[in-house]
Image (cartoon, rainbow, N blue to C red; front, side, top):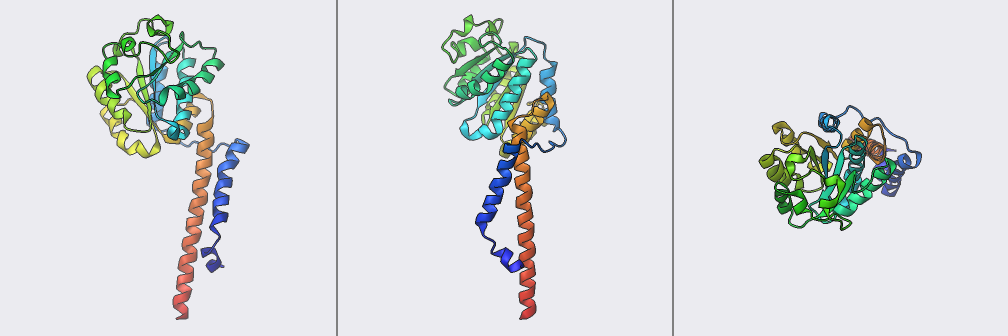
Length: 275
């Protein structure tokens, strides 16, 4: 039996993995999120502490490849920001960001009866990567003179009273690359603006150090961070479903690894005994 397991058709394994990945999405089964990570709780608390009307920058520094982990974060954060009657300023320093901002924020804003240009705005993208970050320290409207729809930002009610970082309550950078490092170096450090980040899980070890130094006031780590935040705001979505699917898939993979190792050592021991 063990020898047969060693030569188990891998296509069956692939099919089983595909099945356990799909089932949670079809049944909307949600696994337990576990204990809330302190860095997730800290970001939630920061937003809760802001007074209504305070501007919050939600930065979309990722592309389609980062959507599975970062888009659920964006949706959950947008919901929390807008439900608290804070002003949401969506923007990007990577070219793929504005369309993802529109995709994540618009449905939430419509659900909460928030008006674009009044309660939130998609400022779009400005080339230069580091350049717009430094320029916003002097004048945000000059850095983003028009929004994603081509409207003059100086004329939008949502931008009233906003000049530079001193008028921003919090910046949250959602990134699949090294953009948070740029925001730390060119926004937080020189202007002392509060900064948080949402990152893909593979980047987490690079950015936990900034929590310890206080340069980040909160951090969402991959799909788990998205699921935790959905739990905190009481609206379970793709983050929770994705974590359920991922957790079950990991358990199945671990099970096959254990069975494979038992089979290998059992067969090897029997071969040695027959020699």
